[in-house]
Length: 203
Image 1 (tube, rainbow, N blue to C red):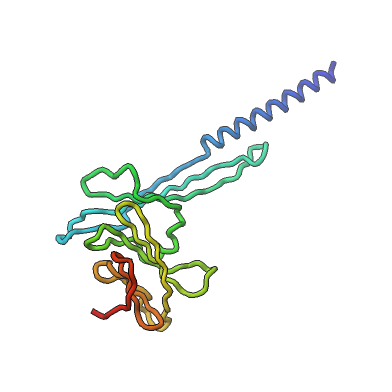
Image 2 (spheres, helix red, strand yellow):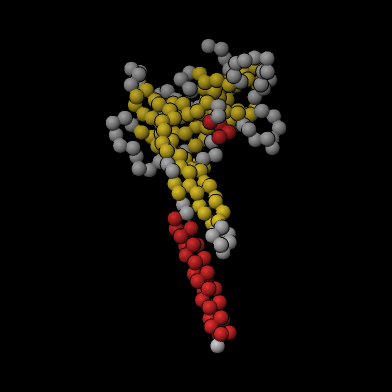
């Protein structure tokens, strides 16, 4: 009799443990996602009078998913970073749909340089920075162009750094229409609007 009661008790404990693990699994999947969105203006377009006509807002979110890896409540935390870009017009509500969505680390190779800048006279935004991909040899300037429909154009060009000169190896000119970068033969100029490269000519 005692042996039967002991077996029943063990079975009850095993069943309770299994149910506890199942509930933990469900709760981890259902409530393990924690989002923390934050938004900020990263670029501003002004008219000839200096009035703000359009702004580019980036909303970053950090989510954490807890995945159970053991029967005793242990779990693995998986972090995800995402960012959304919105075109905001002063005096109007922020659009519900972003013009661009990307991983939070997708633009890090560019944004540590010069962030998004408006292209004067064109519905485009441009940013540039250095390519930090250590798997490739050489030096590259990484240029990205965003238009009003959310399309992103990426361009990379080799540049020659001048370690004796404190000036940056690239710069923006002509209302951000051009990105000028140093080459072995002098300077080249990338035209954001025409998507073309030509030798730079001093104004």
